[in-house]
Length: 340
Image (tube, rainbow, N blue to C red; front, top):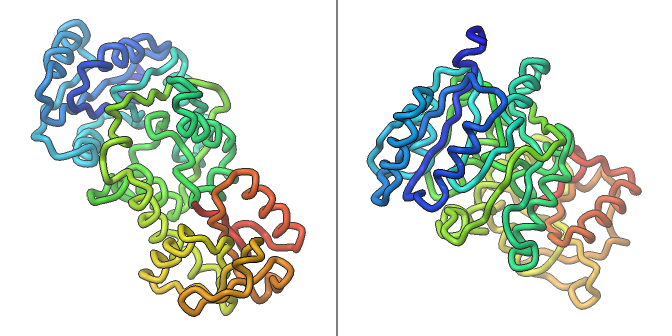
């Protein structure tokens, strides 16, 4: 097994994680693949997190504890990736749990698929599906994206992979950069940037980890993970994608509601201007919003004249719009794209 030593670096940023950290670390050390290093980046915790890490590190030399001044998860991730000795980096969060075969299966997948840069997996919802209905629906959506093609086509709706479920080649950080710091979700921005560079994302179609949603989870309490923050970072990369594909066609947005109009404004900040909205509501059709007309689907011209971005969020309606546009010979990823 010595030949596999340090092939994998598990990078685990933590901050005041005393409630969940022990279970997380125990799940890591229950892995069937044992030749890894575990880098735990303590982002200035003021609870018992450092003591928990030290107690584990005394028992297992594979743990490397790296204390940091509190500066946020992006800084902690970058510190971990710089220090990682592995060929591959496996991401993990302190409030989640790996199932025993995760590291082994992702390692072998990357070994056997040299054209793949990032591999994820299916995840189990670690919570009450009724009390956390929105989170459960999001996990169901992520789990439905099981190929590179579906991951890529859906990347502007939301992050198409669960952040702590990924393993990737360290060389990607060296080529395309690590986490950027700012008022946006650092993981989603990273995936969008790497996908723009042509990095192939794949997914093992097995449930290999539990993705928990505790009340103190960062995504619930930090403005960097607000819907507006997600929309703005999406707009940056969506604007570039539209520029590359629209040619001299008109840009039409599906949905004429307030949320779509606000997202249209995010695009205009990137010098992408909407020529019209498409809606099925007869009360909206024929109206103008800030000089932008609303048309019905029956008025939609062909793909030679229009490029369509659909911001309709309801999943059933989203699939219906896909079906309608595809039936009119619009090709997804070339003539239209789904966004969120």
